[in-house]
Image (spheres, rainbow, N blue to C red):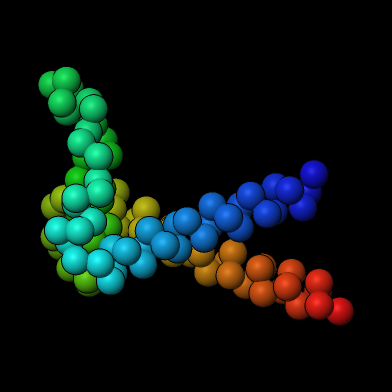
Length: 101
């Protein structure tokens, strides 16, 4: 069970890594084309995650002030995701080395 949870976390961390890489390397127009329309805003409501994709793109390009204007949580969430990816990479590396022995 412990290995299954670890593997699931590593897979999800890989998805996060690809998301962060897309924010850094993909053109903003491409990222926004694949971003779904906010259901809450479409129905006339409020959404705390609106602007998060735009914020991630700005963070990926080092435009921190613009990221804060898009969504205040974008910078801290990006930092958390990046930290998670780094920890996952270290743990995956140790796990692979252990399996090779």
